[in-house]
Image (cartoon, rainbow, N blue to C red):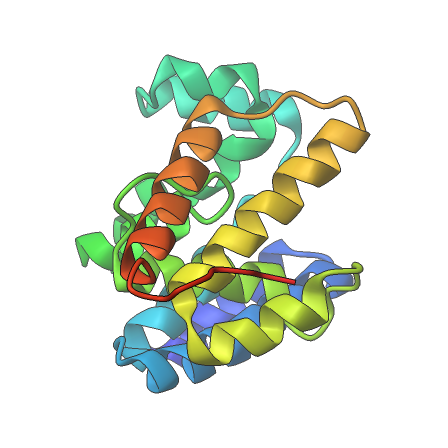
Amino acid sequence: MTEDMIRERVKAELKEKRFRHVEGVVQTADRLARIHGANPEHARLAAWIHDFCRQWPKEKLVQTAKDMNIEEQYFEMPELLHGHIAAGLAPQEFGITDEDVLNAARFHTSGRTNMSLLEKVVYLADAIEPGRKYPAVEEIRKVAEEDLDLALALSFDNTIEYLIQRREPIFPLTVIARNGIWRKVKESRSEQASFDIK
């Protein structure tokens, strides 16, 4: 299936506002991939499919996830299921079988430890695409141009702070991923006399 065909299939599944978001993620993922040396085509493919199931009813998400034998821990937070389901459907729906592309779609909401370069690109593209409006977005956008790991760490912090403020549960793997990427960032900068992020 060509990229244009994938685009049209995704467009048919989503409301206009959500599809505009997906287009923004595709553009941002392509740009970040080119800056940081990831495969731009793979970044666009993962971005096109990442929210394919985002607007499914909760009952359909849960039932499909059960049918796919998705890990039980994700059922506690059904809003995390759509990426896993999109990745599971992608080989049949879109002819996408590259495991890195599928994982980039699969983990675009929660993140995980030891994310691949492509996974980082797509996770951040989802967080900073032009339609996103939140206080830290401009800072994260600027950092993402220079340092993908630092941008990822800041994005995890922003998401976790937002969830805490709203008294929402935080997926444990997201916290573990956040801790891991901050450890990596700090280790990579350990030669500096001081480390201060404003």
